[in-house]
Image 1 (tube, rainbow, N blue to C red):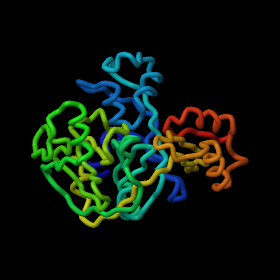
Image 2 (cartoon, rainbow, N blue to C red):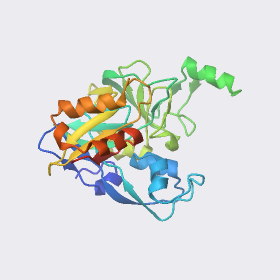
Image 3 (cartoon, rainbow, N blue to C red):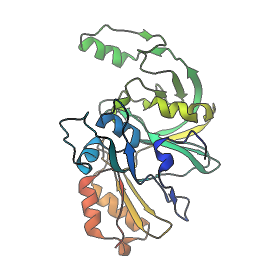
Length: 287
């Protein structure tokens, strides 16, 4: 296995179905905590909301830095789109999926734009790669600095205080970069001004080097995904509608299940529970 696949998930099961569209990744595992871990940082590494991690492990959400020696996790995800080559970023599940020759090479959590500064959807290509980038601060962020009483900076040189970190990929979408971040706890959150933030360990683990200039990609907004596993089990993943684009999540889920021809094979009580929770985890809804 290539060494640059997201490190934690190397130990997790890949469960591809016979259909290329039905690719399920992640699963149940035990996370060995590291020095300095807090729930937000664990969340950023494993792609699971910190509140769920706390609840499933009997931890107090008021003390995010008491995580114990090991955590039981289930971060099963449905890959929303399978492509021959390139990058898929799903805003709602806060994950990046990287493909070559029709194979999923790596996948990991990312940080995305807030409601005030949403990450745009659409196709793109990688137009540049940069080590130790200089950050040309957008006007919107300069204004925010001024409102907060901070020193307003127009340019931030390379270094430990540069929010772009040491590695940045420039996309053809105006102002949108896929970049390392110096604020790791903002990964798997919607807190950026539109850019895609990546943990240093995932940027370094081969992803940056493997991405070529001209590589295609797409940012999508797909909060409902259904998949059938190799064993025939039906999984449903419902993410939060963070940008409030969905009129009715229930109608969205029902339409997707019907489109797949699975209406008579699912447990609708389980479906209703997942719609209420919107946990971002893929769960078995087989009747």
